[in-house]
Length: 261
Image (cartoon, rainbow, N blue to C red):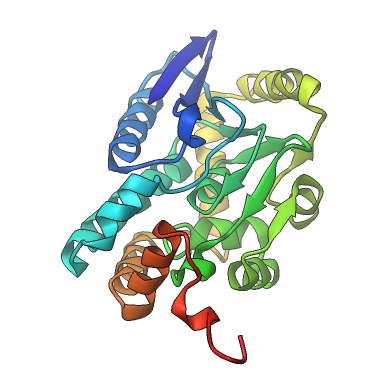
């Protein structure tokens, strides 16, 4: 489900579930959290690149995981959400610079992975969607990172509309910092890595801490906990349960079937 390849002083962590578009479940979340912590403690690794196998970067939640969540209690949902929040926080708090290599679609939680990395570079094949509202859910756990990446105003739009947007728009609003043709993606990532490795490792860690300290949207422990609480609450709400059921049953949710819908 996850592969880690060290290329010199750069480690490439690849989500490896191409058959389901690299969607994550509790096992992949735990594996990714452990792998990132191990890499952060390894002095031989200076930069971490996050990538996806197959045509997609990450489709968000695994359908089978969503089926299990649909029957979870609030306490189970909270524990589940806290594990996802911890994974995102782990990416965000790494001492090493992180680069998202976005070669294809990133939806829902996949957008959170992109936003939690320090730098994101994508191709025209990359598409993005914060789809939670159409499931009667909220992008709570990923919201601190996405709002920080694209700004409050654009986050309001894409959180509320759940529109799909392309790499050009992602670049315009700051979710991506660069767009390159697909054949040039690896060369562009390698160029970024070479610049990052040229910096002092202690200095880079301190710079990351500096940015968090001076940023008005800094993600602190209270915000991480609050985001997990919010998604757990909406998952067990009547609308959240209806939205997930409708999605899994491939039907329209009840709130779209009124005469004015």
